[in-house]
Amino acid sequence: MSFRNAESGWMLMLDATVRSALAAAVGEDNVISDPVGLRSYECDGLTGFRVVPELVVLPTDTASVAAAVRACHDHGVPYVARGAGTGLSGGALPVADGVVISLQRLRGVLEVDPVNRRATLQPGVTNLDITKAAAPYGLYYAPDPSSQQVCTIGGNVAENSGGAHCLKYGFTTNHVLSMTVVLPDGEVVTLGGDTGEQLGPDLRGVFIGSEGTLGIVCEVTVRLLPVPETVRTLLADFDSVRDAGEVVSDIVAAGIVPAAVEMMDNLAIQAAEQAVHAGYTLSTAAALVVELDGPATECAAQFEQVKAICERHHCTRLHIAGNTAERARIWKGRKAAFAAVGRISPDYFVQDGVVPRTRLAEVLGRIEEMGRAEGLRVANVFHAGDGNLHPLVLYDAAAGEQDRAEALAKRIAELCVELGGSLSGEHGIGTDKACSMPRMFGTDDLATMDRVRSAFDPRRLCNPGKLLPTPRLCGEAPGPYRPHPLEEAGVIERL
Image (cartoon, rainbow, N blue to C red; front, side, top):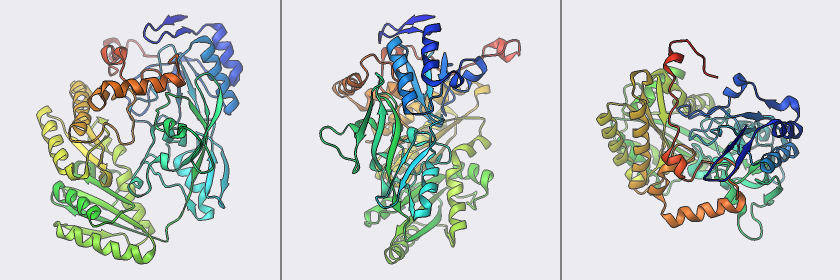
């Protein structure tokens, strides 16, 4: 089998020679080639876009990752690195006739160093398991995406993931000290150092957030933090999204930096409450979760200020978590919101954009108007402290609403740029928003990014078609998967 991509110039030769080389790299038992097995890798969390790869390989250590990459490089085969597949931007969407390199078998916590407050991990370790490994030493890992129980540190590095507590503690890039990386030609290098810095260009910083286009991370050393002395959490209800948004602005204006400030609108609250019964008020227009942590005296004083600000903006209910169990229940409601939306809609697109905090009320109003014009509902749940929106566009594919929903999600992302924000806060650009990049960056900016990518991967074999717009991607996008009429009738089965 062979195929030439005219744009990038790579040549696919997935014949017996290539398959033998990949099997030799990772072991015959670590190769998936049957159609049913391959379908498990056809998409990530953005399930509207699907491509079945030609082959999946599952290396078990850095050496076998490097060997698999060298085999792809030597034979001109494009490949996509994949972690847990929880990404929401199509960043792990396979290449047809290409290879998926899955890192799910690299799950070792290699070292926890409590003296220097750091841990070294393989990329398949889940975000939450880092904190579990550090907990016996009174330490934890600060970035906490809502999917932290299943998302992996390798994927966190690729997307520069954040989470609810990134307002105070920063994103993945603020906590990664060094990485062992396999470059697109199979070379194994170390980026960063014991302090997160190294002589010369900040290649560690360039790699984090590059969405798998510059290489594959095989080991990560992260910074650990001491567990805070005190944590205080409250849940506040408001009759309007505008009131809740003004509370966020006033908290920051008062010089308070909470560990987290999260907001949910009524649709998101209804979904989450049906799913996990966290104690949210079903009738409220908006709810804020505010959490402070740090020294007990400082935390107590700032908590009183936050309560006063909430009351000043017409808070209708103020619930303060009285113990660890209540705090966990409040956070369970917030972190369940994405999945819980499936209870109120058969299908939905998850979008991700950022706006200045001062424009939260404006952008939410605009989103509501746009949804009404399309006849679609939009649920909003987001990191209000840093203006990172996660609108969920609800639709029914069976009713033919998918195209309208996809177009609305794209317009919402581009609206964020129009209002002075960005296309993504943490989910990445991937396949989903690559064609919107010119809305945010000029021609020279995109050309510079492309040159950096070419310096790492001149043959464009490593996760091609992601992040940067290309004529193929933006002019000939495969579009959402739609079943063939014969498939719908049960006459044929998709493999």
